[in-house]
Image: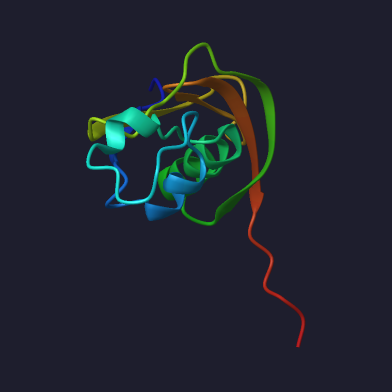
Length: 117
């Protein structure tokens, strides 16, 4: 049987991710009434982390250990708030790989090994 993709939704907004207020293109004076004027964006490293988390959720018992070929073709802004679908499609040639969107990358996964002790 063909691998079955799984899709989850990531809610992106300054309210659900307040740390994004530290990642704005346009500083405004304190108390500025419109967050959109600051243009908060999701850092690429945060996008990769969410994609790795989605890859792990799609394959319980496997851990995302590497990301290959990540490309970010546009900014992911946090205003207005948006629900971003993240789809994990297992690779047909190896169960350790999956394609994850919205950005383009391929995380490798490996079996989870308990910590010693």
